[in-house]
Image (cartoon, rainbow, N blue to C red; front, side, top):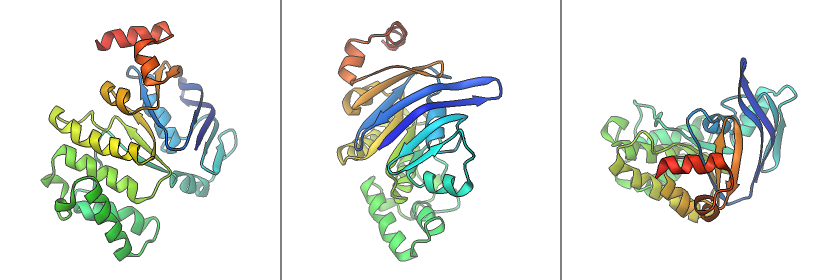
Length: 244
C-alpha cells in the first residue's frame, strides 16, 4: 500500500528527515512515536504533500512520485487524494455546520452531487457517533466532537490511507477516549493508518507495528509486544524509561 524509499526533507540548513525508508501493507496500523523534533509530523506532512520532500520516492497504491525530479501541481493534487489527514487542531470551517464541513471536500474537490455527498456525510457522522449533531456549528461542539467531525471529513474523500498527527494532543483527558474509539473502529475495519501519537495504550492495543523516530531517522521498528517488552536500541530504551 505504501512504499517510502530514501525520503529526505530539509528546511534550509536543517535536515529534518534523513533517508527514511518504510513499507506499509494494506490494512495495517503503524504508530509512530518519538521525542519532539524527531521528524514524525514532517514525515506525515510529506506523505500528504503538505511539505514537498527534498529527495526520495513515495508510492501509495498504484501512484508513485520521485522527488529527485520536478513534480507538477496535477501530480500533487492526484497524489493527495490518496490520503486523508487528521491534525492536532481540528481546522473545521467555523461558519459551516458539522454536516457542511464533511460535505465540503466531496462537493468542491471531487465535484460530487450535493445530495449524494449529503447522504455520505450523514452516514459518516453517524459512524463517528455524531448523528444527532449534523446541524451543530464547531463552537457548539466539544473538542472531542470537533475532532470526530475532522475524522469524518477526511473519510468523506474516500482515501486509501488515513494519517493522524497527534489527534488527541489538544483534547482534555476525558475526551481522548471517544476519538481513540473511532480510530480503533477504523483499524478493525481494515483502514490503512499511520498514527503519530503519545498514547502508548493505543499503540499497544491497535498498532501492527510501532516506529520510534529520533533525529530524523527511524531508530527502531517492531511489533508492539517486542517494542515495549524488549526494545533493541539504547535510544529506544531511554525514551521508554522516561514514559514510566
